[in-house]
Image (tube, rainbow, N blue to C red; front, side, top):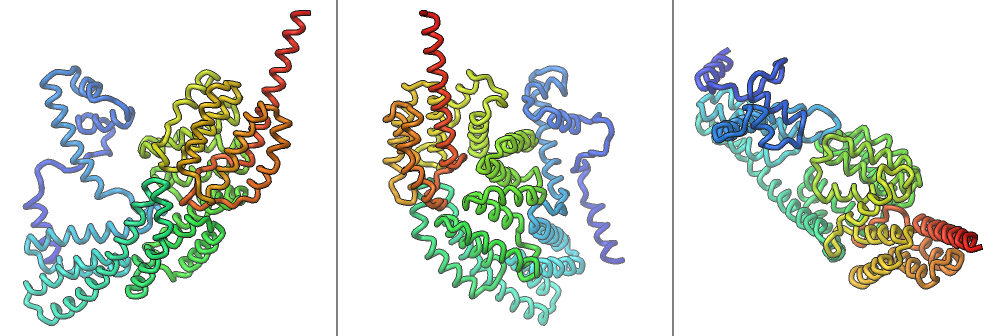
Length: 513
């Protein structure tokens, strides 16, 4: 009982006067701290002025000062609650709960050590070290071993000090290898997050990065070096368009994980599922990908950014499978997710682009009027230069919208934009699909918007498009709708326009007669 008695003394002697947490169990929000939380919960977009009036009745110098103090106090209490978040839900990253447990133990030990409670500190440190080793969290194992060594010096225990010093040396050597692997991986990741041009340049460097990571993993044989190697292997396959190989590797890795050959406290099987679905999307296996998406979606928590990334692929699979109604339903589910606002601006812009395509495909189901839809399409954000590979999808949608409206002047302007973009960014052979589709769009103007002529003369280009392989991610312009299906839609628009024009001309002749 001595350890518990000492712990009770430390806590009772050093506890803070004001509770550092919020009492969420209170039925009525009588305290202003909780009132502020409830107001923010009920109306996330509420302004500071509205909050001040709601809490203090009016906005004044005194109430503004009080609100600033309240805001600071509540923010700190909310930060304190981060220590007590539910981490056991399997839909979250599995490694997080084990990593946070190591951090929690080390934090407790650091306080106990500072208070001179060495006995309990040693017990918790050994537990921290054991859990760090089981989870292969080398960074925390080093911290725990280092503090244990210091503790054994204070306790005058030379034998234990020598043992832990030897272990610390081994761990530091392992950490050096893992840090080098981390540097290589994140350097390549940074290039991926930049422009399409930078990703293409990275393609030639990835084999070298992969070789370095293989060498490091051979030396370290740790989960961390394995993971960086695995992710880089997938990236190289993704960049080169080897999507079938991605499916094989992710399937094989999942089997190893199921057999316990890969650390179950670390490996994120959700990421494996995501990559499998992604590979089905890009390997023209939309129907099978849809089935997998329905099965895997339940593994992602709706509050996580990964849920939205997965849903993007789910929507695209529905569009590629020509399940437009399902795509619209999935779009609505994503927008109704209360965490939709949490996404970065670029992610929300992608959702706007998907929405524009879905509404264009199904104007009868669009909540927007024709005029509002036209305005919406024109305000879909342009991506600067060649960033993110979405410019072509935007320009094509705007072109088709002008075609449906028979707005030739603006259509020709979009065609010129496509031509310039092709000259600057789509000159490589790997961008053949986009090049072929551009030629089909140019053909429409050359053939004076005649559907039969366009269909006939476009057949060789369409055949080449069917035969063209899907480009790797390093070159890919996003095909929200496969170009083959988009060409069919384009011909339908031309036929509808011709029928409308002929009907209008006949009506005009009837009036003259």
